[in-house]
Amino acid sequence: MTNMTTRDKFEKLKELDINSKSKTQRAKINLELELLANRDPEGFESAVMASAQKTLEDAKALKVKEQLSQISDIVSMSYIAKNYFNKSKSWLSQRVNEFDVNGKPAKFTQEEISTLNFAFDDISKKIGSVRISC
Image 1: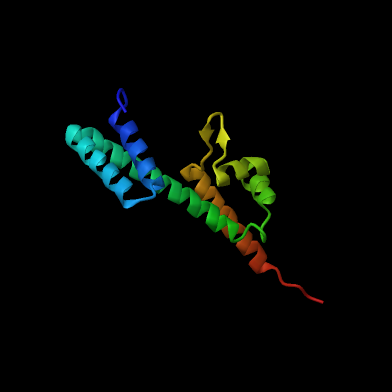
Image 2: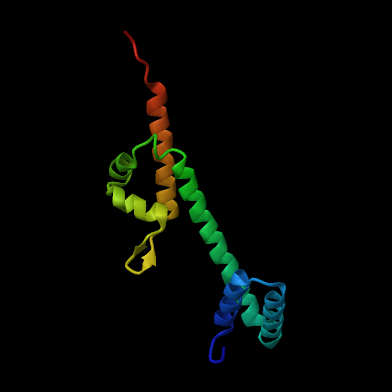
């Protein structure tokens, strides 16, 4: 693992740890992580923080997708994309699923999350106000 940054080494060791099958492998990886931390404490801290941030972002993305899955069979995502974002269903799907667009995962901006929340609130009011009479 020469000529790699501390962050690269950390990510490689983390991946090895995740895929390790035995306590012996994990012990060796933990020793390498300890040595890495001792050689470059600032770089190691930065790598850990970057990894934690990525994990948090991944969890948030899963949370959005999970929340939308609860209502996607009830509410038309095409309707939301067209009427609240003036975009296509595929545009909305790219963000929900974080598909790569121009080499980067598509994500909702904070403003788009606000628009999405407004859309659900607006739709729920519209549905709640419907009363059928004979």
